[in-house]
Amino acid sequence: MGTEVSNLVEKMFDAFAMTSGTSYVFMCDIKKNYSKWSLKAVEYFGLPGEYMEDAGGIWEERMHPEDRVIHHKQIEEAFSGKRDSVDAEYRVMDKEGNYVVCTCKGKVIRDDAGEPAYFAGTIWNHGVIDNIDPATNLYNQYEFFHALELLKGKKQPIAIMVLGIKRFSEINEIYGYTLGNKVLRELAKKFMSILKDESWVYRLDGTRYGIICNVRDDKSLREMYQSLQNMARHEITLQGEKVTVDLCGGAVVTENYGLDVHDIYAKAKYGLDASKNEKHGELVIVHDDGNISVNNKENIEILNEIRNCVANQCEGFYLCYQPFVSSISEKLLGMEVLLRWKKEPYGNVPPDRFIPWLERDACFFDLGNWILEEAFKEGKKILTRYPDFVININLSYAQLERSEFRKCLVELLEKTAFPARNLCLELTERCRLLDLTFLRNEIIFLKSYGIKVVLDDFGTGFSSLNLLRELPIDGIKIDRGFVSDITTNCKNQSIVKAVTTCAKELDLNVCVEGIEDEDMKNFMGNFNSSSYQGYYYSRPVGMDEFKQLSFY
Ligand code: C2E
Ligand code: CA
Ligand code: CA
Image (cartoon, rainbow, N blue to C red; front, side):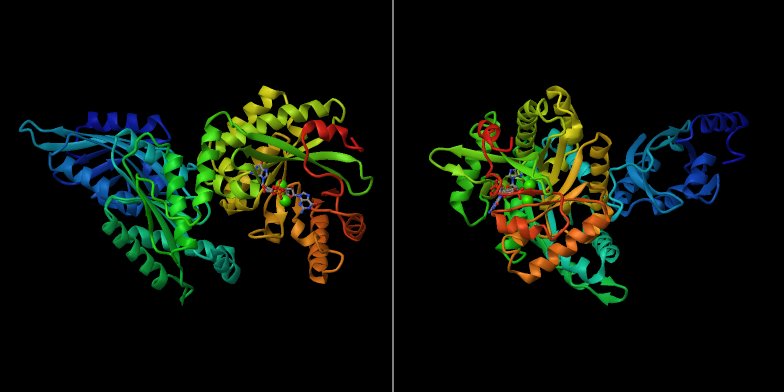
């Protein structure tokens, strides 16, 4: 361009290029495909130079493969005169290999004959922002929900597929966490290469992937899934060794635009669970007529009823409280809040029966907020008597994963004037399926408010000693499964000894759950723990009864 563009234009270009560190200007002579770009962009992205031939091609190489198609199409149309402006958002790799999100807006300038002559515009660099999953470089679940909102807004039929990995914990155990992440990245890359045009892949919570599909009929969805499944089984390698990855998948096809995006996702997860638990990994598709293939009809009925109740100001729900005491003085330290639901003709339905299901439902978030608010109000009354009293509230993963969670929690604390230092959140088993970095950041946020965080049911499922080191938690609760036969079961004795010793080394509190009698309590005296909870002290009871407890 140098000689082509007049001095004045060059000077104007330089003036604009200087104005901001995170927006760049570019100008391209279309016929020669010769461009000038801001020096700042050249430096940031490690481009060959300010003046470039085929800058579009060079730029595209740095672009996330998934975003290239749309960008390419827009530029081609602009250069051939089919469109006058370009407006695109995409991910581009910077010098260090991190993807950043950029928005590009450009205009075609035509010559006297009306032919496209120049293409000029601005690129905004939004920086490394948290809508990209660092492990796979895919957009994360926030973007997934955002994209679903957009589709809903445009009233476009929606087809999403959610993919899970069977026994991923085994892959992590065999190869370790870092290589496990490599598998996730490999899969992401291969998914993208298979799913070319206009199907979008996202990394969701845990080891799930979400796809917004460009096909919507059952046959095409099954074909798409089949090719992804075959690839995962046969084409993933780690350090030259083949790793067999077994997928399971659920899909939702819907034209019901009244559905919340989280409900759409919840439906896909039902499909995913059915695929995993009943269909040996076959794709389960859920349609608007609501045929969800799960085996227990009665359960679904109760679940629907419970869901209605949540929508109806949490009708039928109430809270029980179970004390925990100091392991040394046996004085009252705090209480755990436990949810109950009662409604005829179902009677009292224990939380174990509905929480694991309900957690996957979008409505759980509202219920979770109701639990928090109720517990804060009730708990506050105790604080006048015991200023250091702690209330432990179980937190579901359906709450943590929502971007609004932080704001809601802080608002509820303020609304009820409950002091954050008297709150302890128990992270249940499934919370740990969230991405470790995400989980860490959430815990750091909670702690910055003075809220305590403990891992519940430690020793079961996915909990590993590694988590104790990686997460800035205050303590753990040892699952009662290890404690129920502690006086006689040598294996459990060894496990409890190892876990309590390790926790002590790391300066973590240990609460032992399920203390049912004096023998158990006395035996636990052999280990380092800070507090005891269990029927021996009290069953979970209502607040009035709680205040009648002998040690209150
Ligand atoms: P959890 O968090 O491990 O809660 C402790 C469970 O052990 C409670 O069952 C409690 O009643 C029971 N338990 C306490 N002491 C003893 C004992 O000495 N012996 C025996 N056998 N059991 C004892 P519950 O209330 O049925 O709750 C079951 C699970 O439901 C909870 O396990 C928790 O995972 C979930 N849950 C309960 N309330 C909530 C809630 O508000 N939010 C969430 N996300 N989950 C909840
Ligand atoms: Ca708990
Ligand atoms: Ca527990």
